[in-house]
Length: 432
Ligand SMILES: *Cc1c(COP(=O)(O)O)cnc(C)c1O
Image (cartoon, rainbow, N blue to C red; front, side):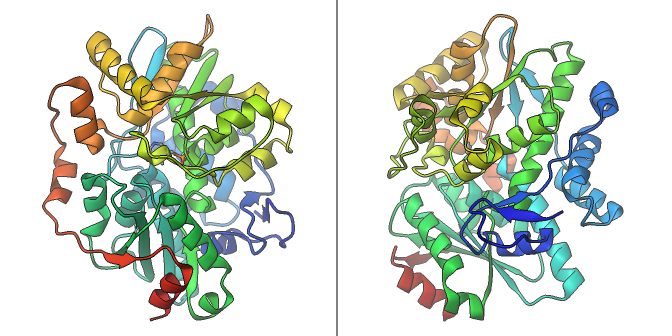
C-alpha cells in the first residue's frame, strides 16, 4: 500500500516509511491510497466472529500487502489480549468500554499495535535505534510508554505539560524507566505538540537521530483504532440492534473518530457519527460555520480532549475531499461545559448505576440529546473513571475503588526531566 500526504506535496511513502517517519516531509499526514471495502459475507457473519478475528480481517485490508499474514495475525492477536465489551446503559444507549487494556484507556490498542509493527520493521531491516517522540495531554503518554516498554531498538520520549495531567496519569509514564524518558514541559499540551512537530522538521536533528511520532498522526497508531468499531457493531448486531447505529466519539485530536470514519468507508453499517467535544469546540464550530479556526486549548475536566488544533482534522477534510457539506451528512457535533459533564456523570450514576468518566460523559450526553427515533447509540467510553478519581469522586459524592492494574503504578517513583517550551532547549537535550 502506498501512503500519500494530506498536503499533496511529498512523494508517496511505503507503510514502513510512513510508520518510521510519522509525518510526511511536507508536514502533511499520511493517508492510504486505497481504503478497501470488506466483503458482504464478512458483514453477514460478523456477529459470529471474535474481536481478534474481526480485527485481523480489518488489519489485512490495511496492512496485508506489506506484512506477512502470520506476522500480522500475531501482531493483532498480541495487541488485543483484552476484551472490549459493549454494555447496555439505557434502552437505546450502549457504552463501548475501551478501558480494559493495561493503562485503562482506548489508546492502548493503537500504541500496542504500533510498538509491535515498528519492532517488526526494526528487526527486519537491522535498523539503528528509533526515537519515538510523543506529546501527551494525559492518556497518550501512558499508553505509548507502556505499549513500547522494553521493545528493543526503540527509545520513547514522552512530553507532557507540567501540572496539567492527573497524578495517576503522570505515574503511568514517569515510573517506568528502561527505554522510556518523561519530559515535564513548562507549558501547555499544544506547546508539547509544537515541540514534537518542530523536531520532525529540524534538519540537523534528523541527520543525527531517527525520529518518529506515536501520536495519532502515525498511521500505525491511528488505523488500528478502526478494529473496535467493527467489533462494536458485531456486538450490537448480535443483540438484534444492528440497524440505524449511531456512534458517538469523545474527541480531542480526532484520531479515534477518523478511524471510525475509515470503517464506514469500508462498508461498516453505521448510519452516522457524532463528535463530542468539551469546551474546546473547534470542530463543532467548523461544522456550524464551515470555517476552521484553531485556537489555544483551555483546561477542562475531560483533559485528554483539551486540544485547540486537532491534528487529524486534515485527515477528515481529505477523506471528504474538503466538502463541508458531505462532512455534515456523516458527522454532527456537540460541545459541553464542565458543569454539563459533571451533571451527566451524576445523573447517569444515580439513574442507571453506570459510572462514566468525564470523556465518556460527553459521548453519552450527545447521544441522549441527539438520537432520533429508531436509532441505537453507541458511545466510546474512552477511559476508566478511576483514572480521574478525584474529579469523579467530587462529582458523584462517593468514593470509588482503583483497579489493581492502576494501583500498581502508584507505588512507583516519579522520574522526569524538566524542560522549557523553547525548541532550542529540547533540541540540545536530544542531541546531548
Ligand atoms: C485521547 C483521548 C480522547 C480523544 O481521542 P482523540 O483520538 O484524540 O480524538 C478522548 N478520551 C480519552 C480518555 C483520551 O485519552
